[in-house]
Length: 299
Image 1: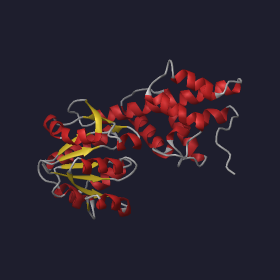
Image 2 (image 1 turned 45 degrees about the horizontal axis):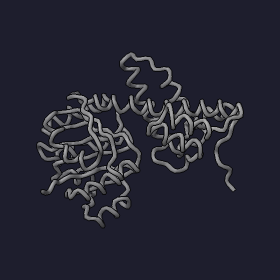
Image 3 (image 1 turned 30 degrees about the vertical axis):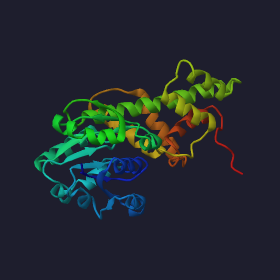
Image 4 (image 1 turned 60 degrees about the vertical axis):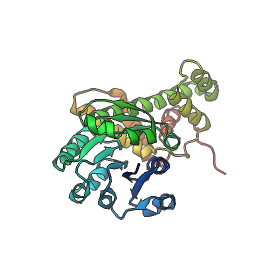
């Protein structure tokens, strides 16, 4: 069965996701602002589109995974919406404000296009292995129809109802918890090393006992190795997510003091020219506050 689909945005997640859609025999169109990124996909059978609207034309499933609200809203213009088939399903997999999801859903409804929020949890290696966790919210019929896409991309789907912004709230809450874990490990590791205990000894013990779970295991290994140059998700994008979460918290009168700290930590990273490093470089901030330097010395 041919399933016409397109994916717009071929970054660290979008590129492996597109490969998995091709492997699942989707008839795939791709669009990226930097066309060169799409060339390996074209060699595997994808069609390269010259614009987002061209990619969407004729697609039953329209997948967008871009950096932020501004990038997504720049895509969803009149040309894009007019190009979409009536009854097409837009699977919006970016991390954005719930308010943006609600606005876009209303715009899509006017063109008889279903908007499904479907942000994902997982780093690029998880995307490549079809191990993403997908959170959804939107029209029930559209979510059921999109199962064939979700099965090609992830290991599980969690449904949060029909409100367009619900899945975006979950994504922001999850990213807050993830970065809070990195901050907590950084503080604990700094405490250990300032008192004569190597951070590797502390974190290896904790992640094999009390905190034996993927987030703690994966990020503890990065903190131990100070492996922040291998980037799956940049500190600059993490700052964006903390700002979105803080905006959402402020709009709903939800005090989140730890979130405010995380925003400031990432802001300090940007100010110190570390925005290009992996988001796990957040752990450097408490180390630096304690007078420790975990970055490997370059020859």
